[in-house]
Image: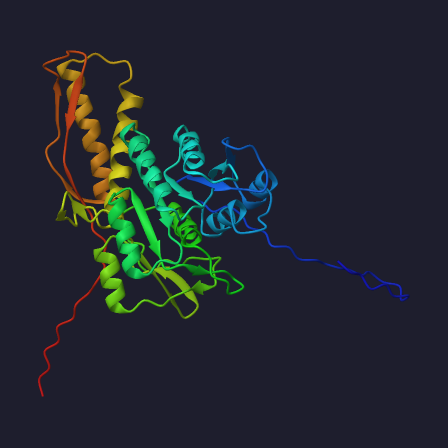
Length: 353
């Protein structure tokens, strides 16, 4: 800051500027595993803003942890649990970082590695954590991969809990960055979406300068059908064309059941909500017919809320029974239909002349 001094009596002022990146109001917490210039390797640290993260992990000389944190907070993240990966960046180093994040309450995980072996390890980690009632997804990116190579990358992962984005983004100075940084920006956007049924189509991603490649419609068809979330840069705005998971097959058969990202986001919204409601109200309860009826009523209350919010389209009969094998176990069964996002509108016009 410079200040010009004059001899005239009066009141003078000066100002300076700084970039302030504040946290958003995201409903999901993001976990990060990345190399950094400082900080304790393997230790999970919770940060609520870019300045907090930079103080712990330092500022990148080459894009890494602090760059990812900046993109996350620029795109709406409010809380991030970050783990520094050892500088060697071996597969085992990332596995240790993913294990450190396993104990954290996060719903989205990103990492700074474009390596497919690391992505397989991340897939295994998020699937294992999700099976242990710690539901989460991962968002990853490659590096220098063509559309066809990205499809092969996605096919190798083939999980409804992993999102792969492409192509590689450009930094604000026009330099090409690995796709992991586009993944970080998209993760921030996902974290900030309050309604899990709202599609990501056209959601604005901030902090990047464009894309290394402009996909054609044929490229986008190939990517969406192959389990890749394609990005586009139009009129100065970077956004996902469509939110897609890498799950495109069941066995060897093509399967689009889990293709839309909103499907797994809705599942991860409904099941923990019902589970939390039952845990809070029935933690010390007898397994009697009366209490099972109360449990059924509570499940219906929660499903009705989701129905009213248009997160689900409908739900089936809710049944609550005592286990025949263990009288201390109560079995709750229900089904629901997810609300689908509106991806396309087809117009058929009849003209009379």
